[in-house]
Structures are given as C-alpha cells and as structure tokens.
Length: 457
Image (cartoon, rainbow, N blue to C red; front, side):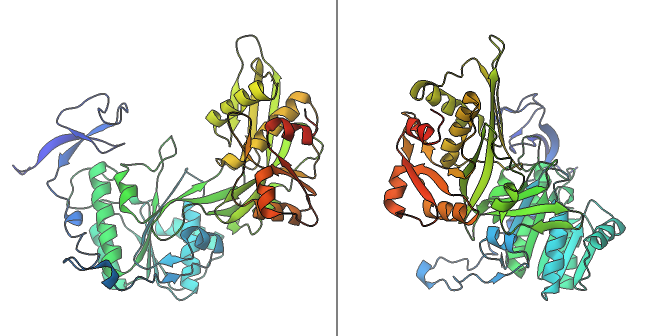
C-alpha cells in the first residue's frame, strides 16, 4: 500500500469519514454503517469533471450560447412528460425504485424505443448475463437492431466501449455494481459511488451522450449510497408502486431541465410496462358505489388532474389502544385532520381505530386532498355513504377553514369528463373559476359546511 494512502471508516449512508470505527455515525446517527475504505486524496474522475461543462474563464451570462435545450423524444410519452419534454443531450439521469418494481424493464423499453427512432443505444448490465437480458428483451417483444448490449462493471472499460461505439444513449443497470480501477474499495461503497458518478457525469458532458443509471434503494426508500450522488446528477427519478398492484408511478424529485411536479403513470403487464393515458379512469375502474367511508378526491400532479378513491375505516378501539394507520397518505397529516374533526366538527374519534387507504397503491401528499380524507373519515364514522357522483377537494386549516387550491378548474373539468355531477370545493375557488356546465359546484368555507353539503353532519 502506498505511503500516501490511509485507512478510514466511511459511512455508507451519508459519506462521513472517521479515522476509527464507531458503532454509530456521528453525522447522520445511523447504526452499523461505517465500512473500512482506503482514503484517496482526490478521485480521478472528479479531477477532470469541472472543466467539462464549458469555458474555464469567467464570462458574462448573457454571452453564453446554447441556452436552447435540444431534447430527444424517448417514444414513451409518460417518461417524456416527467423529463420535461424529452431526453436532454449530455444529461445524467438516476432512476431508483424498490426491487422488482420494473426499473430494468422500463430501461430496456426506453432503449428499444430510442433505437427504433434512430438513436444508437448501449445497454450495460452489471447484474445479468447477456442471455438473461435477451430473455427479457424477447418477452417485451423488442427487435431494435441499434440496441447494443455489454455485460460490464468496470467504469474504465465502459468508457472504452463508449469511445469505440459512440452511442447517443448509455443505460447503466445498475450504478452500484460499477467500480473504478483507481479506487480500491468494493463496488457500491461511498468512494466507488462518488468516483463512478463523477466519471459518468464527465462522460455525459464531454461526449454529449445521455446516460440513464439505475440505482438500488435502501429499506427507507431512498437511493442507496451518499446523498452527494443525487446532488451530482442532473435528474433523479423514482419508480413507485405497491408490488401487489399493477400500477406504477414515475416521479421526478430533481430535474435540472424541467419541473419536479410531473408524474408518469404505467401499468405492469406480462409484456412490460404499459402507459396509462387516463390514470383517473384506471384508478376508479373498480370503485364500489354506495359504500360508507369511500370518497373520490381530486388531486393534482404537475399539470395533470388525477381522480382517486380514498377510503377510511373507523371502528371502536379497545380502551387505551387506539390505532392510526395510513396507507398512501401522510400519517402526520392524518393526525392533524383527526384533531380538527374532533375540535371543529364534533367528531370524537379519540377512542376509535382509524385506517386510511388510497386505492391503487398511489401516494397522496398534496394538501388539497385534506377535505376528501376528512369526508371519508366522517362517512365511515357516521356509517353513511356519500353521493357517488360527488368529487371532493380542498385544503383544511387548523381552524377548520377550507382554503383555496391551485388547478381547481382542471380538477372540475376532469371530474365532469368522467361523469361526476357535483363537486365540493373551496368557496374561494368558485369565485375564480365561475360556473361549469354539466356539473354542480358547491363552495364551502369550513369543514362543517362541507360535511353538511355531503349529508354527513
């Protein structure tokens, strides 16, 4: 070992380093994450990274050319929507998701569609043999001739393949399997991930190749490795969904070339991931009308309104053991809504077990779904079914007031298109959007008014 190198213990969660082993990381407070590594002075990939983006000398921002971003359509409209209109030349995109959720399938479909559109695509697999990848290729019914395959884990050899083949798009599955020959630690370690990511980013910027990199996730749902990896890449996508459901949601949590509020909807089938053109109709396809505790909420994801059924079950609990369970909804938000219903609407649910579920495996984090969740809770508690032709949305404040939300007109239009005849929404939104033909708009200012309009007071 060189005299200039030294042994350190690096946290695999946050990347912090310490000269001796500790049971708990002093930086992120995680247990058992410190791993012995060789500390290198400067990663070689990072050394050449910052000169890759343009001129080294300062210049006026208004004099910088090339501000118009050229995009390449992937052939998958839902993915293009999430990316902001298509694939940007020279971008590095990290996509994560639970094991078996469909990341590799989506990437192979992307490679197939891009190759069909005339792009040269290199698919690098570090987890499967070429024969295994070919089996999945055949199952998807793919046949593109410009889709190239390499089973490789060395970052340097991958750079050699890119130099020789000159692809337009490079797909890495997965980044945790890659290693740099300049770093002595194991693949997937903090040092390797930093070095490999720096090399891929330099490769993307210097050669103009667009790169997709699949990333493993930890038990808490974040991409494995230090968060610095997510900071280095241009775009971070998550493929979400319950393995027991066929629906998949592709969501951007970081995007240097577009919005982070868009989602793409897919359905897993035997032939791969199929795009869902009308997610609202799919999520409501198996809705049971006339059931207490079931309310249709109008959410808004990016530029797309989304109707989804929220369900609540309120039952009497054993003394001192009331449970609160939220699937697809924020547990802290549920606790807030229960407190408001107790204080402002006279629904005393402190001694009850409360279960909330968003149908279809979707997760709703938007505050505009507060009123629908509150209505579902009241419906189950009163054991009264709301009108099946009614859609509900609005944000609820701590004083029990119903606040206006964005995109009210698009939510109402989506509800009208799917056959709903009535909408319960914030009164302030009605003042802005006016009347809508074919659907009755009922504006409410408080949670009591909303429950009365639904017949749940």
